[in-house]
Image (cartoon, rainbow, N blue to C red; front, side):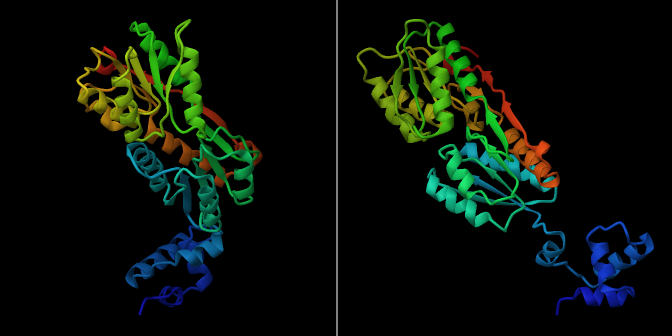
Length: 329
């Protein structure tokens, strides 16, 4: 049978309460006594119950992340950044997907209640009302790329508008005047901000040339097929994320068009594969894993310090990464 805390107390010659304090890192246990307790626990192979510890500390040592999707390189990188930072702090990570649906996001938020010490919420399709109604009261949370500010919660946003503005101006500086844009979901905050930056960056007198998308590779491919058959093709294509840019690249190549010789191409996010395709993809770098790390560290700070001044609102700058697909590099 597994050893119990009473077995450890008996072997160390102390009370159960003293064992509990020693194993939970309390300062009011003499060093010699603590050493004796740890030695007894090791000899008996005693593993403290996480559930029992949480009753004492009122902590689960677990954080949650509710994301719009778990598929693809973007979310893989984001989770990697969160997980690495959590592991460094001895925290466990629970991840759930809302599948791009506000109702499912609400269910995921409710399911996390009581299981985590804090939440990272990336729900770009949700509004302030939905979040305020479904975020557990008093639970620290960091809202990631939501475009929503809620009292008591930190907010971490990527400069989506600024990145798209800079990229559109870069394509125009290469001589492009007809710049097409493959957008993301209409109810998505990030997609709306990238579209806004594209519109503001167009050359004077240029008309927007818009194609609908949903951030998937297939949406980029479909847009690329349509672009390739246009009587007057655009000079450049700017996709609202890299996956759509890669799908578009495949369609253009299959149609016999060369990138960048016949059309310039750019994406957004700088997912790892962007540098390995041919031609290498010009894109807007977000620093996805770093974004996840900063979100976790902000959350950990909010958990440790629940005071009002722990609330932070931060915009993460983006960076142009110029590669061969836009005629450079």
